[in-house]
Image (cartoon, rainbow, N blue to C red; front, side):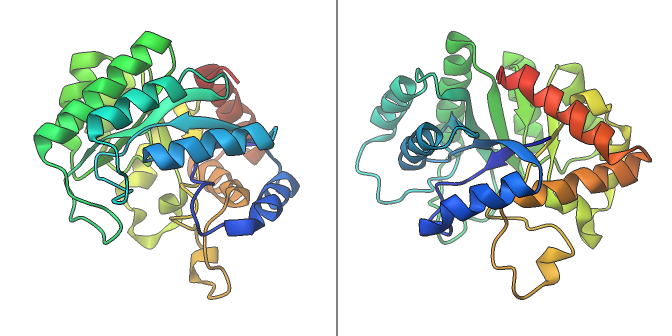
Length: 264
């Protein structure tokens, strides 16, 4: 059975069809879905979804860029509310959080480096205090992310890993898991295939980052509008192909990895 370790089920793209999304995931052999968040509002929704669906657990966190521009609370208040929410038994980790120095998409609001450092530091300390792993987001911020990994030595996963093998070795040496998604099926995947091949299977997690990053060949299908947890099977199949091993081995070992890290 597969585990999708990173899906944004609270995203408005799913709307009232979440029952169908969970059903399709089950039919595809997905036994557990880890519903992550990037804002306080999404975190609250993730906990609610985890309370409704037995297959779902929640991860609560605040993204380095502001993904909820309508949030009325100050950042400090949001973090304090997040800390309370993180105590829920439905919450298995803190995130996604980290650094993002890429151009800001329309749905996000830019934060300064200082703000991002403060927000990430708070969540790293919260992770340590609660004994729950961290889910790291890093986009165009490799050096800063590595700096903080070496500074805090967190237990957790570098989600949507797209860096080079040298960076992967640093993350692995610090005890982190690396998570791969639909990007490894893209023609632009390039170096990620090498990283996935070199990374020990015992340190790999599977994810979709749904509703984003739909894997090929579904990505090229105009009828497929958004990504969903059922598609994590395609990621597992690609990992098996890259490593030249059986799909079943990938499914079993990566699920064991997720169960161990998130104490499922």
